[in-house]
Length: 214
Image (cartoon, rainbow, N blue to C red; front, top):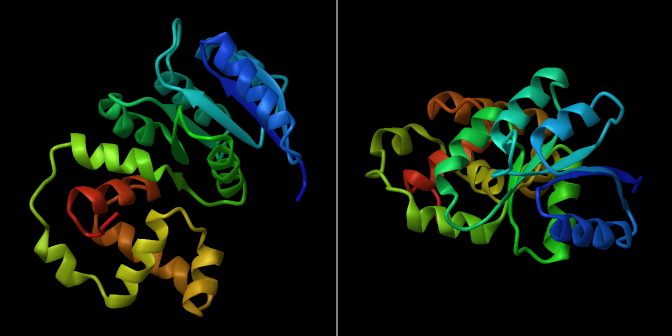
């Protein structure tokens, strides 16, 4: 695997330094820059081209939501993973709206961080299972949307379950022994049928409406 260039954005020096040290010693990762707030990060983008960004939510001067929104406008397609703590569920949809590719709890071990970065770098999404349990516990769930469930084919449900564990379209195709083009079509149908603007919304929709079990 080629070296994955990472920028870490967090207002706590100790956390940034620890994460930088762990990633730089992990073999396939290179922390090319770090920022203590969103404003610093936006300035860094003029000089750096990260493969993946690890973005905190709550920071001074410019928070992660605004920074992600501005960064995605400057560099569409930028891959950003949100760094979250328990109790920040109210911000998740805002970060999804801003364009993040995944969520990680700050207390995740380094192996999960590596897996998340790799998954997003390769074009997939990553949602910490522990974080998803936290979301399920804290958000107000809706009643199961029976009309949507009945409108989904068995294959679409299979694809949805694999999307929700962060697999890429290619990985889903291999697991289900179908073509990537077929998976692309199923994903597009799922987004349309659930009225989800992107994959992150689709995952949250599936959880809130009990379309999957996690």
